[in-house]
Image 1 (cartoon, helix red, strand yellow):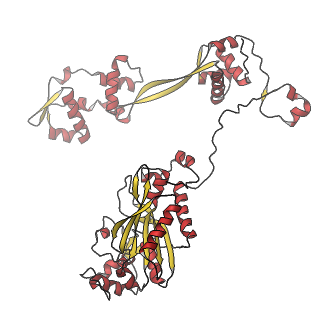
Image 2 (image 1 turned 90 degrees about the vertical axis):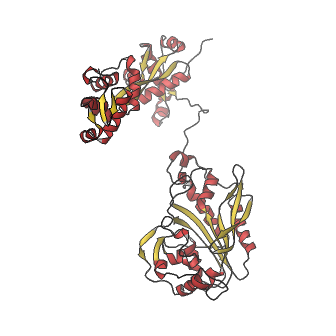
Amino acid sequence: MEIKYDLTPGEAIVLRALKRNDKLTTSVLAASCNQKIEVCVQSAMMLEQKGLAKLKDVVNERYALTDEGEKYALEGLPERQMLSILPISIDEAKKRFSEKLVVISLGWLKRKNWAVIKKGVLTPTTSAERIERGRDEQVLTLLLDKKPIPEAYKKSIAELVKRSLVRVEEDKTRIVSLTEAGLKLASEDIDVAPEVAMLTQQMITGGDWKKVKLKSYDIHITPPPIYGGKLHPYERIIREMRNIFLEMGFTELKGEIVQSSFWNFDSLFQPQDHPARDMQDTFYLNSTADELPSCYQTVQAMHEHGGTIDSTGWGGSWSKEKAAQDVLRTHTTPITIKYLAESPVPPVKAFCIDRVYRREAIDPTHTPEFEQLEGVVMDEDMSFTNLLGYLSEFYHRMGFKDVRFRPGYFPYTEPSVEPEVYIEELGWVELGGAGMFRKEVTEPLGITSPVLAWGLGVSRVAMLKLKLLDLRELYQSDINWLRTSSVCLRKLY
């Protein structure tokens, strides 16, 4: 049974061009057809789908000198340069050549058995004049002169590639040829009517539509994806967290990136010799606060001897100068504690989700900048049970079905807990810290009601929801990942 092929004008042109030649590269084929390469390739690919043509990619390797290789091709390899002045002491050689050249030449002189070191003197194993130019040196010269490399020299080329003196460049060529069916069809008279993709008004009124061929469409071919504009996945998660707390009746707080050590550390009953305040953990600035708040004296008393409550404080002397030192905030707690100090009358429900800064080495789980979610609830009848309830509700709304709490320790909360969520592939994952502010924190600031407080890792939640293993991926602009990321991330884990 004879197969009838439905060809487009472009396919017919390519078919006729290939009829005259056995095989053609895409560039030569395009020139023969007087078409652009991409148009010609598209027609050839359509012919391939119809079984009339074959496309084959051929990769050809060629070699070129690197900048260093070109230098040595002109001046000689390091070992050849050193060989020309032997014998010579190592110290004298270092005066004559760069340290890099000396190190390279010593290794290759020994490897090629051209020289040995005797009592600090580099001595040739034979007369330098009798050592012929090796194949590696000949290859450098051939490449410098743009001449072909004999097949027998391939091993030397590989060695020069390892030495970064020669680089391998690939030339990809696409070859188009006809199949038996294509050759048979090309030998016949190919009569193709003009093809149009859209009918115009003139074609319809003038009757020309009867003489043209309408372009057929394959409804089974997957169209190219269309990527619409959308928020960054990390920003979507941050907004989701923000909306949850707003829905729960919280007020969002904003604060300065630069904070005094008083609000960042001292107001939270963190001792002035605490490891977290070390230079290697905190970004200290060359500036100080103009003045400390009026409550600094009660905070000082709390640190030194426990103030007016049943506490011993931290003992020792408290430095006003240390408290005035400016830092980049290491957490968002100074924003919430400052707000409570300025608004000590309950009820208060507030949160802050913002960036914090710590001197962390960048690795898959740490960056010097990251987001933190801080929250406080102050009211007369607040209890530890309320704290667990708020956190459970938040994580449930974020899509985490199983939530539990482990006892924890933090300098400014007691009791303290660490919330964890269950991920099937990972088990229980810790996501932050929480607790009730100690009286050593609240009393000096004039806060008399219980305060629930938490600081949660935003990026860790984002990594779980986005199934990332490297924290740095949140901040990288991987266009393919951004395009294919889900718009909605709400799901139960």
